[in-house]
Image (cartoon, rainbow, N blue to C red; front, side, top):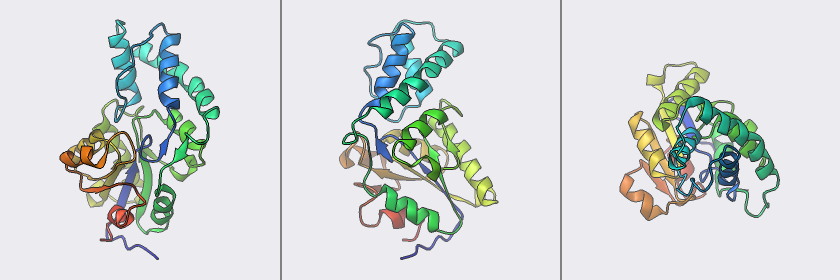
Length: 234
């Protein structure tokens, strides 16, 4: 059954907890990269909704290091090959696509006037590594990434502009929907005037997301009405 999209629509999907779960591969890679730079046991905080650069900055600070841009860049450069190693060796029963994601992408791809991108705190190469493991990287030709900005709202704004450009229209003419699993996704969507579609597939339950007042809230993208809400056909 087709879905009717009434306005040019930019969809920006978060990655970790929304599209896939990596079974901790990303966290292990960050911790190993920090350790290679002499910072150990400083990343015990939740990464949920944070950008890669913000995670590294906080861990370096907690580890007592003077934070500089070259040091952040060094950690992230070390992180990428380690991430590839962690992803490649991750057990398949712990590294998986979340419920409803594939169906949502199929519907989005077939919907008219719709651009499907990423809105993730991962730096782009890291995002591609994570998605390639489950065959999803090529489904997203653009996005806003953690290498575009350390601030989540700013990277979503970049992704929104790229999506509008792909549709050949002004951003003001577009409906932008941020699909994510954390309160930070919801807040960042609100900050750029976008809709938020929150899913309880990550570290936050439905009850944990409700107080943050997302535009739409579902247990997963497989829930009844989720795809219609995403595409604005309700």
